[in-house]
Image (tube, rainbow, N blue to C red):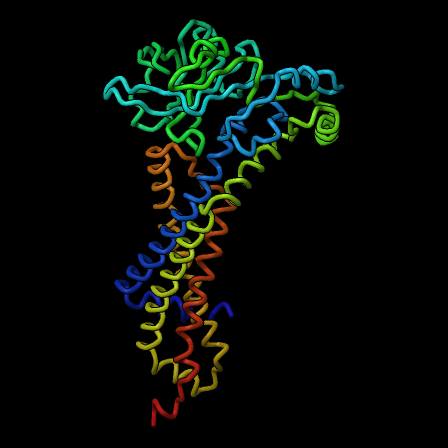
Length: 388
């Protein structure tokens, strides 16, 4: 076996130009599938960016708040009631304004940002940039700005002065979070005191808000406590106007909402399938041409006793070689495109191991299907017709 002629390899490398064209075709299909699937995953992953930086194990939200975009609050007293449960170490209120009017100081145009506010004495967010700028945020009319906000919002630099909700504001720091459906343009961080300054009064741009109503409650649990048991106890013991979730379930509920109530998954799934189909067609044309060029040789192999299973093995090996060799440049190019898309949109374009391996498997299946279709001509070949 070690001395067998690597027929599949010789077939592929016999004409180098054709090999490069074949690899380019496979890589192109891989890039298409990676990009479409990447945008679908990015839209879902981006929805839980804020969830992942909340410093707690349990979340409390209004019963009718199905996602972070819904501006529904609950009474702050619920957090005080939760503190009475054994195992709850701290309760942090988080305030959100999803339509905060931000003026681009360069163009004068207004963009909607999401304002995230909290008590600066509470370690609410797992963002190191916030710890460094806490004292600056205590100053009146100050905010921190999301570096991943869209370019249309204007400069993202410390010291910038502009308007928020038609009032003067100064940027005293920056952080990295990113956009999502609720924060399509980006995010701002501020103290709860400044939140009142901008959003506590009724105006044309904002709704009336107080610190007595909370958008998200974050509960810090003792290390020895059972989170799931606490969630059940809190849900049963607190009034029915709130929903209690573990932070993991809170994030998953957000993803599930957008999966089930939007066409994002279907659209990008369809586009990914189209990329797969394009790959099948491209690889089929390549393998079919190889079979046609070596028709006589394949017929000779059948004439001397090799069966269709052996020939299928050769074609399958070619498909495997093409899938691996074409996948590598496709993966590298896709990682570069992910970075470009992330910088341009603020969405999270993640390339993790499981997704990369899943796409490798899809590429192999794609090439195998093409090989199986191309093999039909070999299977139908009659040596007597070739040499008759």
